[in-house]
Image (tube, helix red, strand yellow):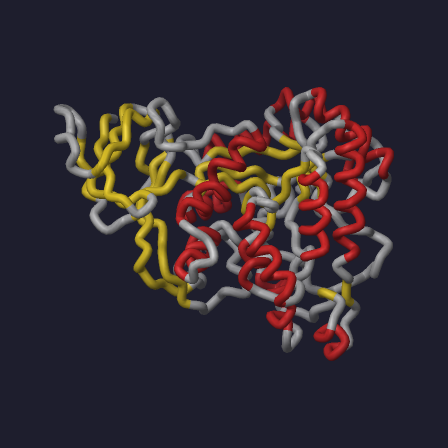
Amino acid sequence: MKLCISNARHLEAPVDLLVDGARIVTMTPAGHHAPPEGFAVFDAHGLLLMPSCIDAHAHLREPGQEYKEDIASGLEAAARGGFGAVMCMANTKPVNDAASVTRFMLDRARESHPHGPRLHPIAAASVGLKGEEMAPLAELKQAGCVAVSNDGRPLESAEMTRRIMEYAADLDLILIDHCEDPHLARGWRMHEGRLSGLLGVKGQPPAGEAIQAARDVLLAECLGLPVHIAHVSAQMTVEVIAWAKARGVRVTAETCPHYLLLDENALEGYNTQAKVSPPLRTAADRQALRQAVKDGVIDILATDHAPHAPHEKATTLDEAPCGFSGLDLAVSLTWGLVRQGVLSEADLQRLWSRRPGEIFHLPWNGFNPGDPADFFLFDPDESWVAGPETMFSRSRNTPFAGQTLQGRVKHHWLGGRQLF
């Protein structure tokens, strides 16, 4: 397919994009050249041209919990949300600690979405995610895993964490660590603070996250190896990461749109839809994360897409599971931060595409000749309501349900092929 996307807007400039097959040919100022003969023309007037996003942290639930989400529905939500690649965590049933599970997941992705989005499994760091025995990482890498994580269950042992970092690095993999002290405020339900006291709910202090992040960066410095800190929620953790980066430690980090948009007050009335791990914290934490994302202390955004069945959230705050759906809404939600002047359009492309691709060695589109033709057109002005009629994930559990969002993905191409 030879294609010319004409009159699109990219980084606030009108552009034309030429695509030949699966690769970018060139991007030029709009109207600078007439479309070459044989190129089909798609008029993108009024729409933003953006590279497909890479989600470095999602839970697609298959195998074992298909009633929440399966790979087919998760990838459909990803495509509609502007994601061309999804890295899925290992806390499936069975856990992705064996090559057979990895191959099953990749087969399911190829069957349901042969033209993408692309699925990139993340290997379990330990057998059964129990933190007792290292998983067979070489076998998992050979089967197709692109990173290593014990996400969902923090690694308690510093010695085990060290061995996983070392062995993963030998395989050119990186440890994505869920930083949470499992003994500090065991049984927490939300952030420890004013609201947890008013609600009479056990909370987790931000030190619970920062303590293990500090352990990880000290190990990384000692070993001279990389580590990636997952779903950062607290200002204290941001300060640990900034300190480590100033020392030259090879640490990268992510946060999620909900930590930039919400705080602990979203749990007022015991709102289970806002229960997430790590918990939503204070307005001061939210502001610190916004600044860290803008400054690059936090390297990337990730959805931490964590779908659940409706009945699982329709219970008490104590009993409800942590997490909510994110793939459908993430780009539109973060576009709201652009509208507010918190981030720029260039920041979004860095946070959702370039840096995840660089950190995890995945293809990404910088709109240079030869880059993969993975991109979408985004209407910055369309208003729509988040809910069952507009979301494609099997689970629509989200604290943003019923809210009117502005900005929506309209068309998506992967490898030069239009998905919708």
